Length: 399
Image (cartoon, rainbow, N blue to C red; front, side, top):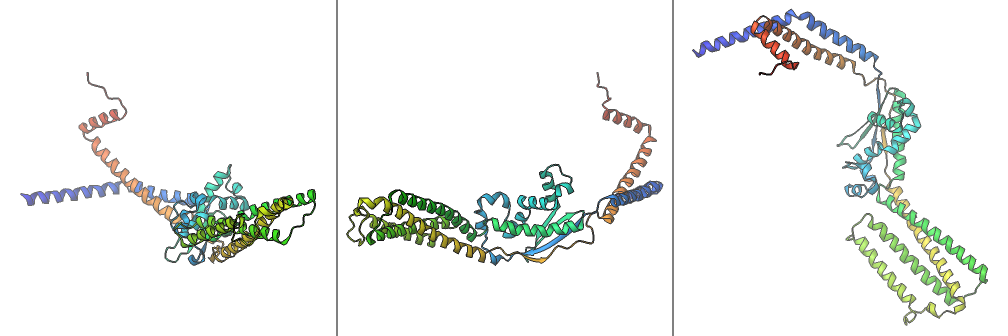
């Protein structure tokens, strides 16, 4: 019994497969014509489409040439939005290459608003961002950066220009600890310079109004000693603020600097104390009243001069450290004008269109054969009409 059932089932499968082959043979013109027609149409479309070229440059940034780390990336502050999901230094570099400042400069250099026929800069930036292709090799650390364009010469020029803009941005962005120190000392140096100019003007105005006041060696020692001590304290405070931007309070260097600052302040209090028996310098409160105002201006001037010199020395040191720790961009392969286009891929487009058309025409042939088979049975005709009415919302609700 079971053997007869299996044999009958195999015969039905053979009949169904034979019926399918008959249907396909019957509609072979539709299948072959549709498939070839789709291929021809897609070939014509691909010939009409504007060719796209991709020029790529390869760069390598030695990790030992800078001090960027995961902790550094998390401390970038205003750069956080630029970094995005950057996890490694190379991720950060790619984000900088694709950043808005870099795109803006490329748009200006190559007149891309006119090239892309964009009405707004935002539209041009969006198109340019879509044309940028960047990737990294995790093993070697090599970054491949490319730009797609309809002009092969412009494509290569833009890829190389992005690397130039990357170098320029690195100079403006504080990516290393040395860069952060340099920027901080640069700002403090400007403030010290302004304060020194004001102190010089105040001293000059006082001398012009009262005439030169001659002071003795004791007073000079008081001025120089207190001014230098104040300047050292101010410079040490600036140094501590810089160190706290990239180190934790538990850092031994910070703790050592804090102890040094405490010692300087203690010495300052001793020098300014009127009743200090240990001081070999005459307290400022004992100076003649006629020279007190002059001494105050002179002390402020000496303080600002000393502070400016100390900050200038730290600023120069930070610049040297920054130059030593600068991000070095090594261009392995410079972008050259590509000979072959990358889009459109005509062969792939034609093959895919023919495959899709083949499936559609085969399905259409089977559907046509099924419809013809159903139309021969009156019951099926009635069911098809009912389905048609339901699909067109023409069915009647029962009373």
